[in-house]
Image 1: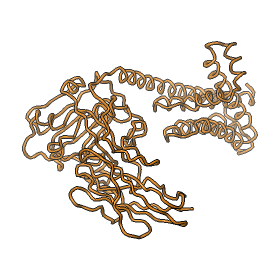
Image 2: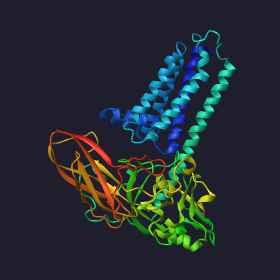
Image 3: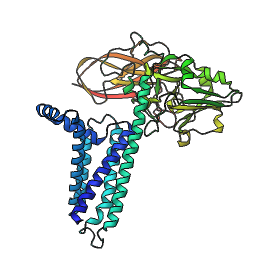
Image 4: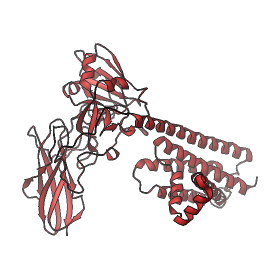
Length: 499
């Protein structure tokens, strides 16, 4: 084979292998891969009359042909990159860089960072593959480097092909596992409802967080690169340790105990002052203290070590689970089975505790123990052993740096102190007196509350601060602290302009 033919073949193989790796990664993560996204982008750009003509010509083959055409185009561009590399490695890299850019543009808008990962991994595959197959084909860069031999080229080509195929098949397999799990989840008919929002909980200010956070926009923070896939019929929860009777529960056992629903606000400890890593939902499940009572907790225990199916651990104060009736083994969120990303089939939710010490997703093990006898995942990394949620308030309207109109306006946001409850919210404008805001109506103490206040603005720059007071009489501290080791503190401040 000529040097030019070898370069073209190598470039095509590198391009297709990188795309296969990217698609496999996307399938494993449960997102749309860049090749499919490009195909859809091409489809959307075809003029309507031409699209109808093509559909009539090829019938139900339109989608397979579109994908096949995208793959053929990818192989052709890869061949071009290989041939171009005969003149300059940089030009070859530039062609692959252009492919990555097209894949990135096809993913716009980037609704999730997860969409970037397949493109990044595919690009790395292109770079490595380019160096392996095409690096020795460039005589002008290093005069002492001999061109790759035919046998070496074929060995490397086979290796890259096998890696690309394995990644693609592996990703497809994991993606099919997710699809089967989602199908099983969709067939579940749990005895739960979505909960009724208290009348007056939403104050109706545009731009303010909804009192109920929709599942699709609820924050997600965990260490799993992709969510574990656990089928309900194979799920088991082991309760053991310092107990009189070890218990193993199936998913059906849990459902048959009778499910209770609770409105609970949860927050991540890494949520900065004014941050979005907090949400309010209607959670349905079984009170943890019922399970612990059945197991029989032995004297001397002070902790429950929670373990996820992927090995992640956290430590929860035992007394919090025994005293708190709303600490739940959750199976449903806002009236539907838990989304896979939020812990399906079972997770823990404990009012008043940050998630890193309580809210284990994909929960499979509860060990009643002592804090001195174990170290949890984040504790080993410098975070606190125990962490109660801080009394916190946030300004949603206006947004920081916004421009608003002169004259009467409304400010608003949310405040929370789960397990204690919010008594009042105060707002300060431009260093003036603290004014009490109107609060939305909520039932119980475990959720956030919306607040709103009216003001009249003159033209110019303004600063607004917010602080809350909980039902114990404590006022939110102004002391600024970082999220490490047990949560951020301080008053949220927003600077904006009226014109």
